[in-house]
Amino acid sequence: MEIKDLAGISEPLTRLIEVISQGVGAVSSSYLIRRNADARAYEIRVISAALQEASEQNNLPVAYKHGEIKVWQKPDDSNLILNSGSIDERSNLRLDYQERKRQTNLENVTSVAAAELAGEKFIPEEKPSEDWVARFFGSAQDVSSEQMQSLWGRILAGEIRKPGSYSLRTLELVRNLSQKEAEKFILIGNMAIQIGESFVVVTHNKEWLDENRNITFGLFVELSEIGFLYPSELAKPVFDEPQPEELPFIYQDKLLLVKRHEIEKEIRLPIWKFTAIGQELLSLLQANVDYEYLNKVGEFFMQYGGKAFVGQVTSIEAGVIRYESLREIAAKTSKL
Image 1 (cartoon, rainbow, N blue to C red):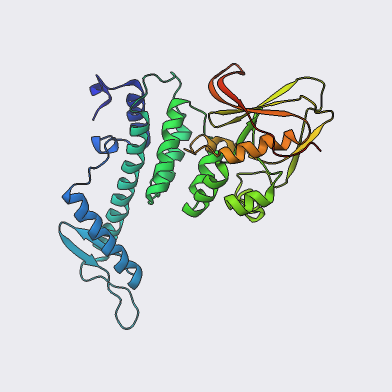
Image 2: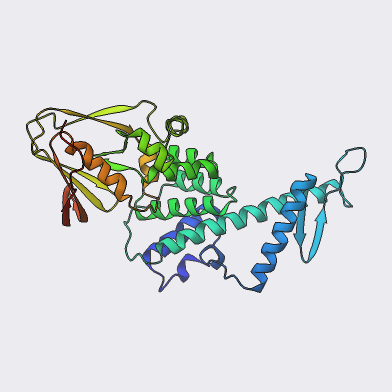
């Protein structure tokens, strides 16, 4: 596929094709189309699973090519040899296998990005930088798990939508991220609340977080070491000035509006704060609203005499939050 043949393709997908071409040098439809689960795909999955199991059990490279299975053998003397062929041929087979796997990885990643951008109509004129594109494809080619490929695909789509969304430092962190670590980030990212320009997890009730959401202090330490969170627990001062009379907290597409009411002095809100890298990656999450958590944050302020309301965010433009369907959180605790 050549750039000149892109008539009729949406601007976002055209930009994606341009970026892929810049990153890998050539583009085919396989970069943009997810495979259907037809009989051939099912056969390949079954064979792949069997080969992977055989490879792991015997600690041997196994390949399936043109309907034939090829396996490296380890004789009794433990020296690793091939069935036949010169060293150059064996080297070429190994390199061919590696490049085919990398090609498959890239096609899976870019097909996720294509699906993400399929419904978009417009993108900015600015393009992702050459350094970013080179770093992205150099890392994404070695990502094999489906979940991590999905993550990388959404990163690519996000960078095309808004260049500069994901820094090179973020790409480096994600490159070294395991699937289990990604799952832990998703767990804590579901609790991220925006206060001003910062994203935080409100931790005034650690016992509840531990027992009901499996969010422990150990998890905080681990994610801090990775670089998602700042390594120290913080206490954010709120209502420390006479104004304003109310404070907005954004939680996904919900608004927690806290009104001063009878709050008479500064409150220190316990938080874990996301780093810049953590904040960048939060935009990739497809989290569910945890209303119980949101209510508990509101109840924290109500203990000091405040009032808390939950509403639906309709838009945020130039720092102005518009919302609807505001409801007050019922009081459950007495004032401190």
